[in-house]
Image 1 (cartoon, helix red, strand yellow):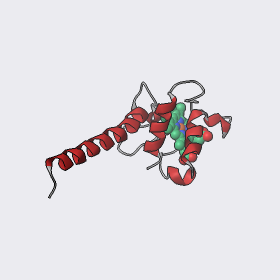
Image 2 (cartoon, protein in one colour):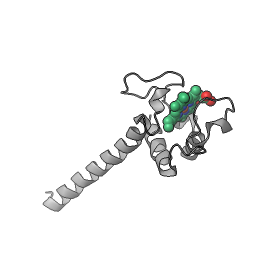
Image 3 (tube, helix red, strand yellow):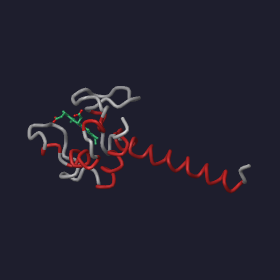
Image 4 (tube, helix red, strand yellow):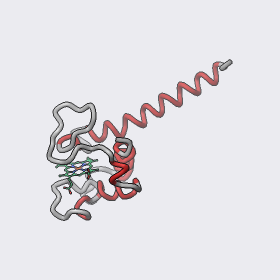
Length: 108
Ligand code: HEC
């Protein structure tokens, strides 16, 4: 039998993981933050742009999540002609925002 403390702890954990999950997702969609959907399709987004490729299978493309973070910081390092903004180099996003967005899209 679960006691009240265990039930409360379980609820607390699921709320926290929900909030953490929403954060990266929200930052990716937010027009005042990542605004990634201006160019990329993210699952569940209406009216997303198609200038960049659909965000999916990311962990296969970037086997180490650190490579993904480096890409978001400065995509021009892998393609000097890219039109994707250098989110880290131009300080569009903070380091912790880049990490949260990476964690969210890494599962897609
Ligand atoms: C102005 C348009 C634009 C915006 C905004 C943008 N991207 Fe991109 N992105 C691109 C383009 C174009 C590419 C294709 C690769 C290239 O140009 O080198 C790309 C490639 C990528 C890739 C590699 C995908 C693959 O399949 O190879 C990832 C991951 C990515 N973007 C993540 C993001 C994230 C996360 C954000 C928001 C923080 C974002 N992008 C915002 C244009 C954009």
